[in-house]
Image 1 (cartoon, rainbow, N blue to C red):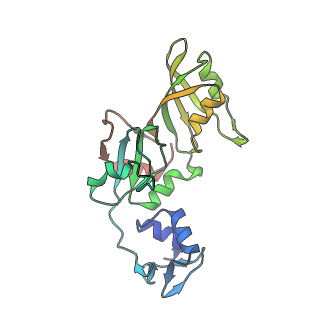
Image 2: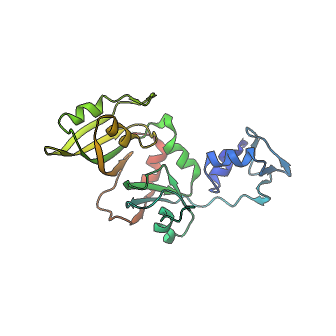
Length: 237
């Protein structure tokens, strides 16, 4: 059956769908010896599909990992600045896996990695509205902070869905909050806190979709079960 080439490259595990679009636009993808344009389709059972002159690999068995990312690691496979990467933490998993979404350098917690580009696309696509919960430690005017954060619907002109916010602990100048969002805007939780005059001292993702971080130690990972992978494919809530 014919499918769009970016989907086929992603499904083969060679790159994400977005990266595949860039490869196609750069003229790096051919079908039956002809360079193709973005939007082209092919049938992997019938057509000879190549990236940089090399055939697509046989599709691997889906592998999906849950990593407890520590602070100080960047969410990428390599870094031009020489910083530590999450790839180093999962190098012993046996296959090449890619991060699903991001956690910035100073953030920690639950991070998914997979060799299945289609699954990654399914989890991260905005239409899925996959819930994510963060535990956030803040400093500043913490009285009424949960209510203020739950009313934030605009970040520098960018509309966002209201978050659910729960107070876990609160002192006079510090608090620990649970913040649940439905979108994945860049540094969204940190920007929400800044808009409310709060300084984030620690940020940890503890839940994504139905997956929870649990007692997994920092820097360690585990394989998702077949049931957990099926659940990720099946819905957002």
